Image (cartoon, rainbow, N blue to C red; front, side, top):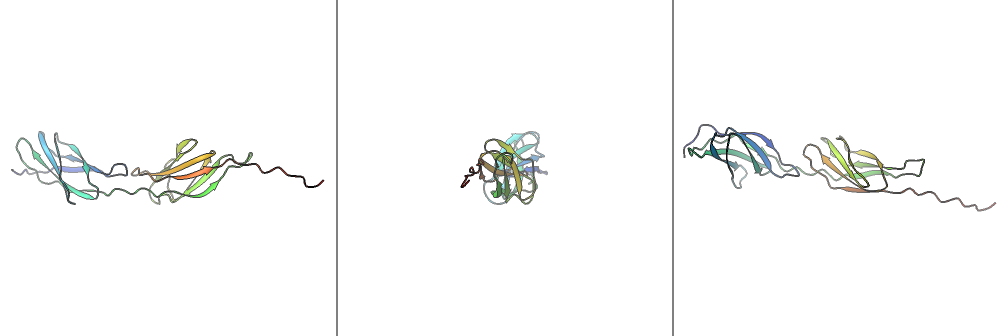
Length: 193
């Protein structure tokens, strides 16, 4: 097998997320004709191979917490390229912490507040996030920052809240809150006239 002078170039990488546990790398610098592209892991494990044509390709299925070098074999000449630069695939990100309920303000009888408020804590300290509320209706907040957040306007019923981290779309476990119907106080009783 003869050796070529140039190797492929590993360009942008799509890192693993909570929803997709593998990395994807865009490779350029491939020959015009048919080729077989090999991805050699630096962490051990099996080589990933992909056959195709054209100068660019995306290679999927790269293991998290692993580095890869890429090399192609040109089908027409059986020439093998040099190795590419090393690409490192990140570890799978962890899910956000489950939010905790810091405070609940239950509805009052009119003319008071007829909907409830919930303050959630244990939210991500860094980066933006949003909360999805599911109950009598479903809605999401805008992107937020900070470790706590208060949601008002909650109707009577059972609500669940999850937190989604914006940077990697990782979703927390849910916390549940019950918003109760307000009860009127008992009518006064005349004890003596």
